[in-house]
Length: 283
Image (cartoon, rainbow, N blue to C red):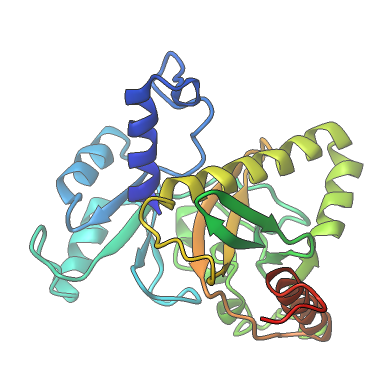
């Protein structure tokens, strides 16, 4: 995702597109929606250089290809990364194993003092031309423990990671609601606390980011009119109500953890099939 979006930005810059406009600090005005990210071991030296420029930054690291929060951890010292690399035989820049390390969003929007992310579903029926649908019944996933930015809590995954597979292992996990809110409830809460205008702007930005993330990969994906894909988009919203695209999952998990979760995902699959194969038509 990161490689494709970076390339997409560069291509737009070369074309002189207004979408690639930057501010006085050299940051993209319209396309700044992924955290600063490096691929290890390929970008190891670049990452070390960035780390030394901003030594007080916290980073989140994840092995590529792993799902449901497996192998994720936070670092705020270069020595932690070096110790870890020795344990895992990580020998930059020759290791075959690939890891993603991103700047941690340390000012997340909190509700009830807890961190959350948004899982949204996007159906793509064509990349050329791009044709996609955003499902309205996504959900917010909450941590079970109140957020604490202290360095002493960096190892507490119940504070930092919203993955249900991790949170359900905690003592405070509620199996009835599964630590989830519907997107509609999230939107109502934000409209009531922040106002409708800024809430509409947040979801407009999410739609904008989704479209451009798909445009960024359109040249790399085989376009077949007989195929479709449902993607699981993960967003984190910061306390300025700016959305950050964290991850795009192909073939996202459709297992359910609660009864309302099961109903929502049943509707998702039903609507998806009705779009791909309109009622009354043969496949």
